[in-house]
Length: 164
View 1 (tube, helix red, strand yellow):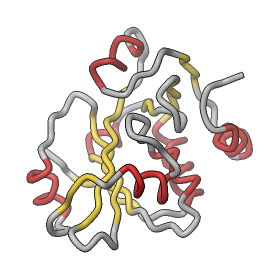
View 2 (view 1 turned 60 degrees about the horizontal axis):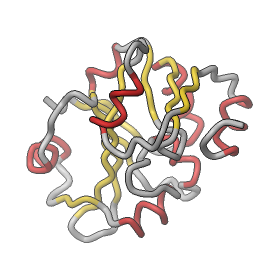
View 3 (view 1 turned 180 degrees about the vertical axis):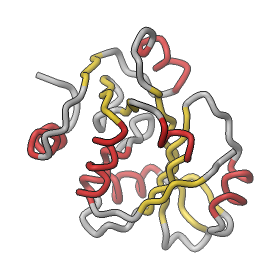
């Protein structure tokens, strides 16, 4: 049995999205996860979940795991006003996830299509991307084209943006 949300695997199968599955011990941070990603030909992603100042908008920001971005730089790039990291409760409410397991695959839980996704433009040109399957004890490597197909199916708004 694979770690992660069974509904995610069912959806990927329904969409004919193939992936490479890597089981590993809990990897709540990029430095920990990098130990388990060695030797795999995918660009591993950092996923950050933000809320705006009013708390009525939420954003998932996906960037290269090797890029260090501070929140003020992200605020300037996204043009959404003052941002802060969303609380554990908001993460659970909107994406059905827990801290350390943030992933765009959590969009399967956003039935209201509330969360807007920003994806760093540099990732568009990668052959494969890597994300947790809604839990941090595994990683899924999928083609960037299949990732876009997944996003299109979920129906959340998203845009490519130059974060650097």
